Amino acid sequence: MLALGTLPAVWVPPLSVREVRRLLRVHERLGSYRRALLNQARAVLRRQGILLPKGPGGLKRLTGGMIGRLPAAERAILVGVLSAARALHEQEQAVLTQIAARVAHEPGVRLLMTIPGVGLMTAAALWAKLGDPRRFPGPKQVGRYAGLDPSVDQSGERDRRGRISRNGDGLLRRALVEAAWVVARHDAGPLGSYYRRKATQLGAKRALIALARRLVVVAWRMLLTGEVYRGYREAPMRRKQAQLAQLLRRLPGESELVAALGTLEGVPDHRGREVVAPAAS
Image (cartoon, rainbow, N blue to C red; front, side, top):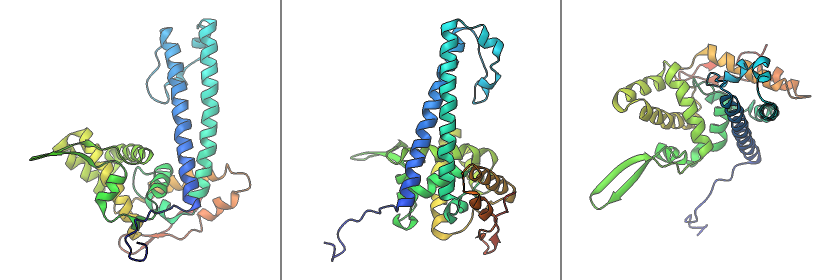
């Protein structure tokens, strides 16, 4: 079968890609644990009639006076869960730093970061999960790999397309949906135009899923061809490079990575010109 070419083959990621995949899973799990603890802290405050604004910054408005009014047992619970959440946040940042160190020099990651809404984590997830772009025959297989393809109900003459299948990689799918939110709000390029057109046809929620599916296909094509995003803007890319450099400074003995960011070769844009990576300050 091997000689005839009929033996099914499976792409095995290299060690560097497997390491990033593991780090991404751990980072996501730590974030999930931390959010569960923060929800528990909100529940403690809610039981005592203290309602803080929703969102990640709501708990920052918690004051010492509010904590002092709590019963002793509730105060102990609140202090304990907030301390644990803080420790988990520190571990998240440590894992994020390790991810940054492993993908800082990857041309594919830097290429994907030219898409608005795609930061370091989303670019690393796309690069690590998609792997070798040549292993996908076409865009349908890429969407199916992410679990963003519509489910199919076929029986006799019935042929109905339902919700997304969710059969693919969950971490990749969640990263794509989060990135799609940002693209939908801020991108003035092809992806943003695609979302606004679909939103008038399908509604905002279904258009967002369609945008996430289009996003993974665009990312796959960019990795395949080496072209940057056609709606590339320099200012957001500079901010992403500065954030990456800040992460690398946290690595002990890894300051040469920060210095190297300014010497990396640029990536060609869709007109064949080079977009030079800005030097880290």
